[in-house]
Structures are given as C-alpha cells and as structure tokens.
Image 1: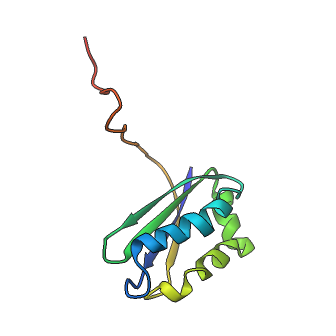
Image 2: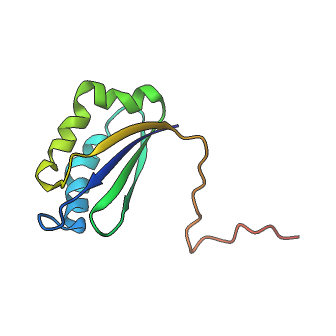
Length: 112
C-alpha cells in the first residue's frame, strides 16, 4: 500500500473546517473514489486550519498517476482561494498499519 500525503493550511476566515470538509466530501471524494487503485483516506486537522490529507493507494504507480495526469492539481485548485499557503505533497510506502476497532466492537483481548 502507498500513501499520498498532502499538507494543507486552510484560512479559517474564508472557510470553516466543517465547510471545507463538506466541500471535500461533495466535490472531491466522489471523483477520487473513481481513480484506479484508490483504497481510502484519512484527514487530520489541528483545529487551527492546518492538517494532512492521507490518501491510500494499491501501488506507487496508482498514487502517482493522479499527479502525472493533472488530476491532483485540478482537485487542489478547487480549494485555491481557501489556502493560507500552497499545499505540500509527498508520497510514502505504507510499511505498517493498525486500525483501531470501533468502540462498540467486542474486545480483542485474548481469553483462556
């Protein structure tokens, strides 16, 4: 699995975090779900407008394809007027992952 990590800094005077998230889920998410190799994403936020968008991809080629085709820049432009500074982007190989169980799931503790 591979990750494309975008660091962003939203200007909260221009748009709230909730409005930015709604814009992402309405405009960006449906299109990114159609990209070959897309496996999900996480969005992390400081509450002060800074955050990370981590999108997960099946291969390095899939993670980089959207950048090479111009698709990624097209999506970033939809938020252009809301950034304090241009977003940064890096690609990583995911070498370990652990997803916590939902709070209402049975305990994962071993029983004897």
